[in-house]
Length: 483
Ligand code: HEM
Image (cartoon, rainbow, N blue to C red; front, side, top):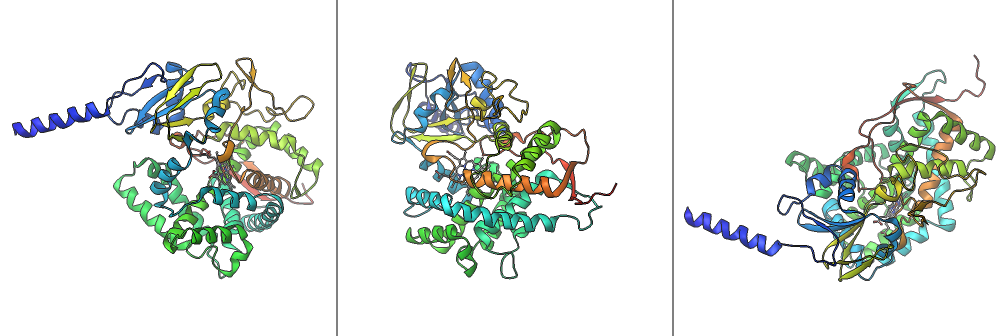
């Protein structure tokens, strides 16, 4: 017994000695939290925005926290973001992405060639290819919207706006990029959506490794089902309709990925391409419905432009500002890099800090610039024209500490690893909102309803999601309304 206690004591002592870390003068303020090893992991995971704001008040724009054995330096000064984004030598994107890929998708790509993959993605989501994708998306959106609507123009259909937007955009996106046509030979996209939603609801816990045993089983089952459903995506005759997925499959094959690995990689692409658009459209429609002035302004612009908004470029500054404002309030990704060689980080105010090899660096643009009251007046409030000048042109000048900002909102990331699908995503949301507002009646079930709170556990994972749904009702618009 005495020996056991002695050995245990020795082990704890050894652990403390080996993992002890104190701040060097040249390093950012260090906050390890009181719990050994775990550090701040629980508070971080529960509500990262709240936690990081607390740390910011305590330490300022840069600090290092311990979370689950890792040390993460958080930088919250947007004037200094480029020093992180542009340094691809000392700060690596791929390693942390690889950790998440393994944890969430059980995926390890052999001979992975990220730069080749990126170039291929860029090619497929720009120029003529983008126009083709936009028109395929338009077609699917029209068909799916029509199918969703009640037949009788006098009957309203009630539903939660989040589920309505997410499911419709997921299905349209899935058909456009993964599923070919909605016919007897293809898998029903509603079925894929239902499984995906289960997976999505567990995603943050999977990423953090905090699933309960029962949830672990569900996550494994759902992941297997999705792998099965995606087994032939991009390999059948239909795939001619999605040149991107065919190219992606080819690249995976060249890299030596077997069939099993390919399915897992395809599920990861479903997440990357479908996980953010639906939630973004939900927030935008929700803000418009709860802000009648904004809704009128967007509708008026759509009537004036009188186009299907299919041809790019389209000039819709009011819509663009409303979307930008929505994303400012609800896009909350972490931009994370791993320090692969010691680096001196130079802040815009001239201060220098040493970053240790093996640590991570994390930017959280949601805290600043997006919700920073010094940059955006009354940051909690939705103002559809925040990104418009008085003459109706696009507003791009925002300031912090008296200096104009390069990054005044950052929903798409930035630099070499910024979002490849940005233009496709914007086009999709614009088409969806345009179709809905011009051909259908859509209103809140309760005219005084407020926007739901956000699910705080999702900070750091791209678009936020609501804590509860927002009930709405809709029906086809009667062309000749009889009163
Ligand atoms: C509202 C919708 C979307 C938002 C807010 C969004 C946001 C982002 C952000 C913040 C990143 C960068 C992550 C980082 O730096 O760590 C990213 C990366 C990426 N996005 Fe999006 N995205 C959206 C829609 C899409 C769509 C529709 C596609 C494809 C069709 C797409 C494809 C990608 C890809 C492939 C990457 C990875 C880039 C890389 O590996 O370097 N995204 N997205």
